[in-house]
Image 1 (cartoon, rainbow, N blue to C red):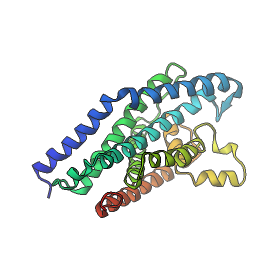
Image 2: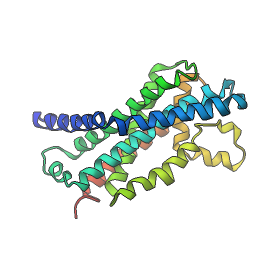
Image 3: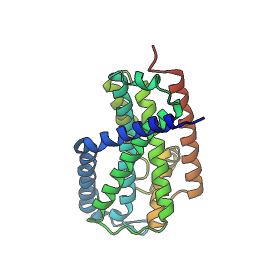
Length: 257
């Protein structure tokens, strides 16, 4: 049964994660804004003007939802993986382990940090994108649901990375060799209809493809994937990763010697 002590402890953890992001805004918020601005200039204006339309939309307009989602995914993941590993590295995780907070509240506290940073970066990138293209919103509730579920999902993935990491190098391996390729091949810059044969089958095995298409549908009302199927996959992945995160943390994997 949750008590006032649990509420205070959870609030303290959430506040600490929030303040940390705001305090290091130049590292947490500024780099993705600069990176996405370069994407808009290079892929949208310089290259996009030569590519014509995709599914009836100007290339710049078509890729913008994907670029926003890419920034949400990468920043949600990076925030939790780095934050949790720092707790391990500084041994402050021991204080959380002996606190009266149940494991699922500690997990949710870290996940909050990833979701908060992901949403904040997403809003900033969305604002930047409006300087380059017009972006209508056809399904506002769907857009909010997609971005929240996606940031939640990749915050969980970042937690797994952080709990299994034994060095700072381990924090960068998965984003570099797994997350980045999946993102680039997840339909951010192209329609899956452009692919043929087994390449299309490989793309369909990429969970980010479903996230990007659901998010694009909320803006442009166009998708390569059935939206109901996309949300089913996102929710199932989120439930599975949450259960895995709780199990790893409960067993003390990567924490207890």
